[in-house]
Length: 158
Image (cartoon, rainbow, N blue to C red; front, side, top):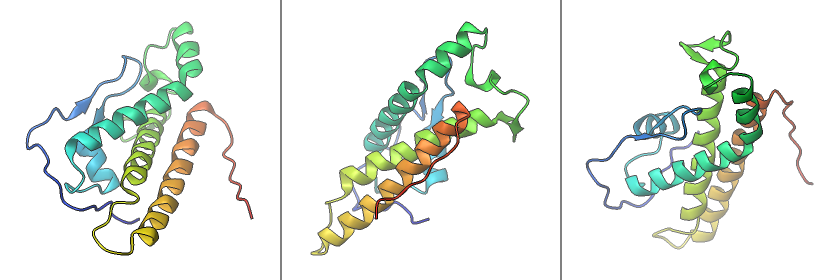
């Protein structure tokens, strides 16, 4: 997978590293997102945080009915859902939630930077970034489908 690398911009040196959604969803570490998805410091911290918040909003809206049903059944957190399915000490649903959030955050970043280039090959770069964004969007939808227990469906227009 390619590294998300964009023209350098000033980035605050200190920041709150954690984004905390409502109590049902796990917190998201900005540093963990950057390391996991290979997003370097050329993407300013405020843009990363904004993209992650937008992604959490997208994912939590898609999973709203799931969350409400879980709470109605006495399950207070995503981590407690399918608690017997654990990888590295965390519920597979938590891993899927983070994958969905990280993927949708990458879509936000790629689409906002798609036409930003210092050289004359802007159109080629924009097309390549849009293709990457589409791949990340698919990964995000697949992660949401995993949480919902739905089958993944891939289709392509020809």
